[in-house]
Length: 152
Image 1 (tube, rainbow, N blue to C red):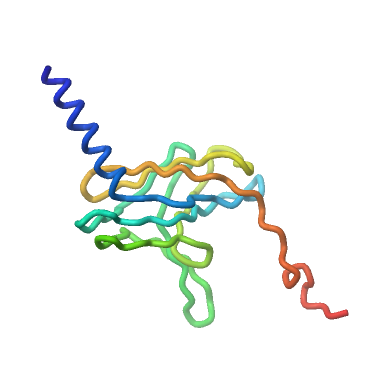
Image 2 (image 1 turned 135 degrees about the vertical axis):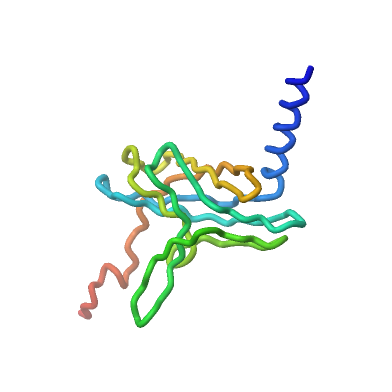
């Protein structure tokens, strides 16, 4: 009976974080076969009345997972690891190319369009949130990228 109560409490705790930290549109862009890093993009929403602090991330599919932000300094684009992501109640964190993102380091295998990547977000409270992201095909080049600056 005691084990059943403990299991029920663990389930309620797991459901609690699932209900309060909402993930939308998680995706990873397909990379070349020898790529050592990939980036995950998504939208996180804190639907709790308390602050949620994401202190780390992990995955069995990658050697290391880090939260990064991209910034421009002295005309240079820089990626910087952030130690934690603190989200106030009802705050939305948009992770997108050129901004906040999750860096996936040293993949265990090559990921192709249609594959699923799983990571765990570790919260300061000790709870975890599993994120499942779809690998999307390479984005087609825009006319400006394909033009290489030539005018005809």
